[in-house]
Image 1 (cartoon, rainbow, N blue to C red):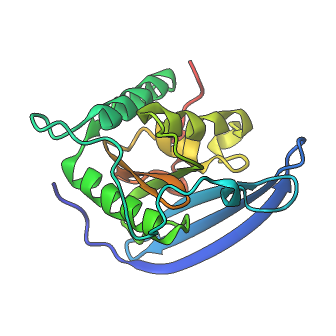
Image 2 (image 1 turned 30 degrees about the vertical axis):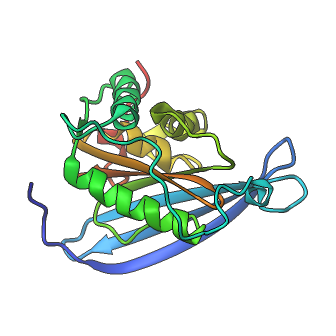
Length: 224
């Protein structure tokens, strides 16, 4: 697998806060990176806080008293290198992509390894933040002991479709997770999860990355 040698030349971050009808506070952080070849990518992270204003992760059950202990939830099958979690996540991606005219993704061992390393890091630190990667990236966090299925995070990311504006192919609202899931130019997926003190963290990486400025019209099609 080969990647271009482009390097990041500028990174800007913007944070917006909205309140849902139920009173929850939604904080969205959008990071735009410009590269040396003139291209750019956008990553979006959304966290929801309870109506009381406290981060809902404070209500999580402690999984382990040692924050540095990390446990992978779905061991990979020895024969294929991918377990039920990865294959289910892939299936969910490709089901949604087919609905928007995008070709199916394939799992990448390399991207799964990158995703696992970052998921372990998030579980150790308890801070949901994007990694410094050349790949596209979607993050998901869930409170407590429940282990999410491979489709859980993908369903959550895709749910942003309801907020997307299609006029002119522009990204409408905070829908960067959805647009990455169905981005036509993306070919490979890597996904992993890890459990820490504050819950379970899911990381998905994509190659080539989606959410490239100027590419929404050609890469994000309306639902068939």
